[in-house]
Image (cartoon, one colour):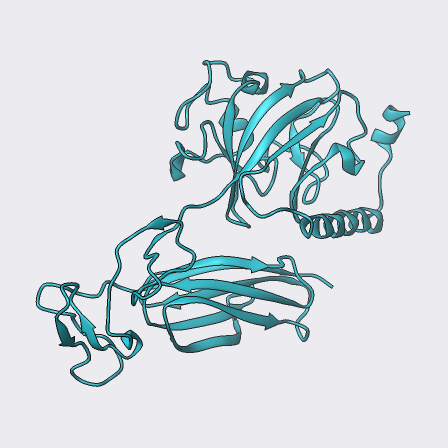
Length: 327
């Protein structure tokens, strides 16, 4: 029966319906996902278990659902029909053969390249290069579309012709944000998880006037009254503005999504939406914002289904993210 099914050719309409169903399941399951708090999730797909059933698929994100066929490697059933070495399966994932804490950004590669490293990419491994060598080892899994990291410990990985069994324990690794944690400081960051430098003022830092140089000396920090901060003192200069995108949720979305970000300085922020041809389709924001967390809602009800690019500029920093509109 399995052999017959494997040779049955689905029509384009049937394949698209399956993809849409899986995407919908992924979106609904994402609503139940806990915050990235280090909670450990245990998953197992037994040998010869039906890989088309949701209980044999690990849903990490709306468009990242990992499973394995009977004689193949891992693949992302939300974005591909089967494992493909040419596409670097599982699509939408990058891996490093070490814990997330020990991994360097340059260590992240596709799954096959990771386990073929024999322990490269930041450490770990015993010199073997098959995926079975990952059992008992903790590796890092990165989802670039969601900017989420997981520590994944493989507890089982069956051989190539043994029914496609695999099992792991995974935990989301919360990104540490260094920033000022003092609420009365000019550059207070309510998203900071690690203490960073703070700049203090007399309470009107957003206007630049009356700021101090850190020693308590009041200075005029906007001598030309243009609303842009000048040097705080002869030996203290404001650094270029920095911002951090906290979340884009939901994504994929229909018809609206919320973009949340934090600023560590009073900055002019531009937020724009482009299509994949690079054409500007909407200006969401262009104004000066205070230090702290901000959220912008984009309602895309008048746009067609597809992928769009969000670009945010603050000072000299630019960040671009993908947005997926579904209907």
